[in-house]
Image (cartoon, rainbow over all chains, first blue to last red; front, side):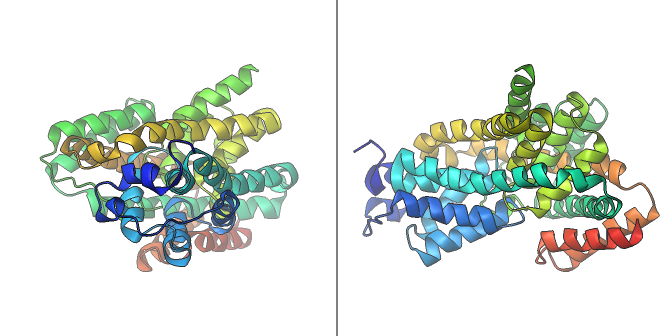
Length: 215
Length: 175
C-alpha cells in the first residue's frame, strides 16, 4: 500500500493535534468511486461558490456518511482557507487524501472541478451566440449589476469581521492605495498586506475557520 | 501555442492570488484578463461574471474555463482550468505534511491576519473598479443597491444565485 493510504498515516499526520487522531475507532472503507461521486454531486448542485460548497461537503462527509469527524473536518477547513485557491477544491484535496491517499485526492478534486468545467464549456459552446440578443443581454446586464451588489455585501461582511483596531485599518488603507493609485498587481498587493499584517499586528489576529471567507 | 502559455501563466497567477476564495478571484481575473492581456472587454467580463455566479462550482474554475475557451477554444479551457488549480494543489501537497507545525504558529497567524485584510482591500477595490463598469446609470445603481440591501437585510441567508437571477429578470424589464 502507498504511504498515504488509509487513516493511520495520511490522516494521523493531519489530525495529530486532536484527540481523534491518536485513536481511530472507525476505519471508513471508502471506495474511490463513491468518493468521486460525493464530490461530483457537490460540484454539480451547489451554486454560490466556496463556503456554500464547504457547508454541503461537511453535510455529506460528516453528518450523512460519517467518514470524517466534525473536529477533524473543522481543523482541515482551517487549512483549506489558509492556502490560496478555491476553498471547495482545497477541501476536496485534503479530504480525498485523508480517506484514500493520493488517488483519493485526485478523484475528489476531479469530482469537484468537472461539473463546473463542463457546465461552463456547455454554455460557452451553445449559449454564447445568444449573448448579443437584446433580451439575453439585458438579463445578463441585470445579473452583472447584482454581482456588484454582492461584491459590496462581501466587503461589508469582511469589514465587520476583520476591520478591528487601528493596525487593521492601516493595512487596509495602505493596500487599497497601492492597488488603486499605483495599480500594482493584486498578487503583489496581497503579499504586501501579509507582510504589513506581520509587522503591525500584535497577535490580535486569530486563525479562524469558517468565518474567514464569506462567499 | 503562445496563447496557451499566456493563459497558463495568467491563470496560475490568479490561482496563486485567490486567497480567501470566491469573490476575491473577481478582481484578479479582471486585472489579468481585461487590464493586462485585453482578452475580454470590460462588458464581456461582466457577462462572464454573471454566468460564473449563476452556474454551479467555484468562480475561479468557472472563470478559467470560460476565458480559456474564449481565447483558445477547448485546449484553452483545459489549460486555464488546470493552471488555476495548480498553485493551491502544489502548496497544499507540501503543507499537509507540516500542518501541525504551522497551523498553530503565531507567525503564520499574523501573516494570515494581514492577508485577510488584504482580501478586504481587494474586494473594496473590485467594488469600485467593477462597479464603474456595470453601474452606468441611476437604474443600475438602484438595482445594485437593492441587491446589496436584500443581502444585508437577510444576513446573506438568501441564495446569492436567486438575488442575481432576480436582478436579471428586473434587468429585462428595465434595460
